[in-house]
Amino acid sequence: MDAKRLDGTYTEKFEKQQRLVTIKTVGYTGWKIIAVDPFQDIDYMSARFQTYTVIIAVFIIILLVFINILLSSRIAKPIEQLEKYVKEIENGDFCREVEVSGSYEIEHLGKAINSMVKQTRKLMDDIIAEQEAKRRSELDALQAQINPHFLYNTLDSIVWMTENERYKDAVCMVTSLARLFRISLSRGKNIIPVSDELEHVKNYLIIQSFRYSDKIKYSIEAEPQVLNCATIKLIVQPLVENSIYHGIEYMDNGEIDIKAYRRGDDLYIDVIDNGPGMPQEQVDALLSGEKDTSNRDRGSGIGIQNIQERIKLYFGAEYGLVIYSEPDVGTTARIHLPVKPIEDFKDKE
View 1 (cartoon, rainbow, N blue to C red):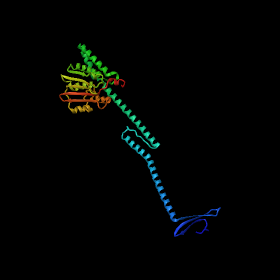
View 2: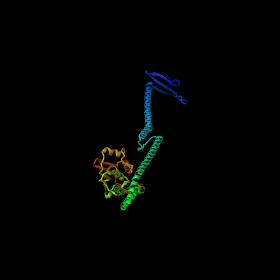
View 3: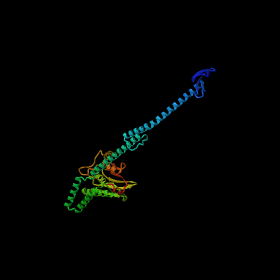
View 4: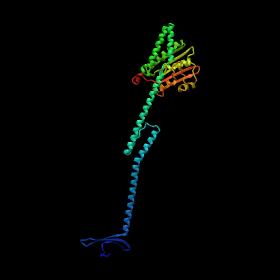
C-alpha cells in the first residue's frame, strides 16, 4: 500500500482478494488512519442487513394486518350484530335487547335502537290493552242488555196475575224482576261472586217458571267453598235462556240443573238440561260463532261466542266454555274458570 495516497476510498487486490481501503489523515498530527475491509466481509454484512430488513418488513406487515383485523372486528362485528337484531325486529321479535360493544358511535346507535324498540313495544302493549278494554266493554254492554221483549212479557205476566187476583205470585215475580235488575247492574262491576251470579239465574228461572206455568223444573246446587269465588257477571243466565228457548220450551217435563263446584284450582259451573240435544257439528258451530242460536225476539240475544270471549278476555285463553250434547239425551254447558276469591278483584275494576 502506498503511504503517500491521498485521503479517500480505494479498491485494490491483495493476495487475490478484493478489498476496500479507506484513508483519513488526522489534521493536527499528520497521522493517517487506514481502514481495510475485504469485499467478502462487506458482502456478508450486506446480506445480513438485507435479511434483517426483510424480517422487519414482514413483522411490520403482520402487525399491520393484525391491527387491521382488530379494528375491523371492533367495527364490523357490532354492525353485523345490529343488522341481525334489526332483522329480528322486522320479523316481529320485540322482546330481546341487543348488547352492542365497539366504538362510541356504534354503542350509541345500539342504545338508540334499543330505546326505539322499547318505545315501540310499549306503544304496542298500550294498543293491545286499549283494544282489549274496548272489546271487553263492547261484550259487557251487549251481555248486560235486557231484551225489551223479555221485559214486556214479564210485565204482561205480572199484569195478568194482578187482574186475576194472584197477588202473591205477582209480588214474587216483581221481587224476582227487581233482584234480576239489581244484579244486572252490580254497581257497574263485571266481576261478581258466584253466589250473586247464581242468585241472578235463580230469579230469572222464577220468572220463567211463572210464564211457563211450572212446566220447567229447576235446581241450583253449589259447593259452599265456591260461593265467594269470582266469576263474570251474566254468563250463566244466557246458557239457561238457550236451554229454554232452544231445548225444553215445548216439553211438559223440562228440567234444568245448575251445579257449581271446585276441582283443584279450577271452578266449574254446569248448566244441564234434558232437551232434545244436538249433534257435535252444531256444538262446534256454536262455540266458533258460526251458528247463532240466540233468539233475539224473545231472549237476550246473547250468543255463546260472547260468553266464550268474555271468559278468555278476563281470565285467559285456557279457560272458557265447553258444551257436551247428544241428540235425544240433553245438553251440558260447562263454564271453566280459575278459583280466585272475589276480594282479589275489589280494587281492580
